Length: 263
Image 1 (cartoon, rainbow, N blue to C red):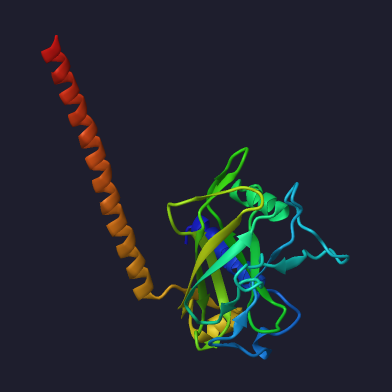
Image 2 (cartoon, rainbow, N blue to C red):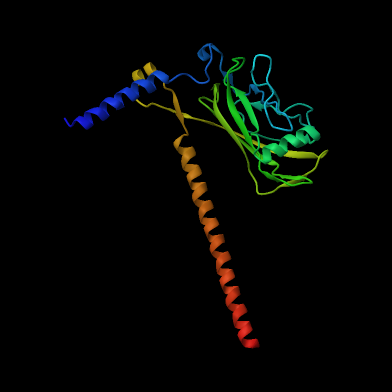
């Protein structure tokens, strides 16, 4: 065998051994996540976010050096932070009072000087969490900021009836913004959707169990749906761009023709 190929195969095997040795459960903890009860459909899920300094965006830490988490801002409607419910799709409004502290924090989030970092528990009372970042869209001006008040929350679980939270994300969902100044009450519209992730295997069941690999992927029907959404959006966007450029070209020709006639 070619010595170069032999060397490459050896390096590949060594890399595989190193990777296998470095694979660990997530989130890392001294406790065994499997010993905790799963969420059941309808269970309440708290949403906690990092406590930040309003001037620098830096985290607050406790005496042990751990990042401090506090509740999501309080909704005027309920006088409580918003609550999520495991496996339950929902739409709700949450009017936030943008007093001085929250206003300046949102300036940091919108300007992307600091992320709007939150967390969700993997299982009830497990003290194990997954990161959950709220992506708020808008722009910051000297006198105010503009904020997209419509937010999608997309949450993933291994089982929506009796399971754990695997991952999640959140993002602004419209092309509209609301002008916000200090002291304003602003109504945020949340749209929460849950979906299951299909567990996939890199090797055989025995191999994956030995390596500790557990991987999840979006279900095929979900992926197909979003591919169709992207395709339709691309077609519409392309049509709009074509119409705009065609209109501009036609307008220039008409303008030139008009000038020729005048001259």
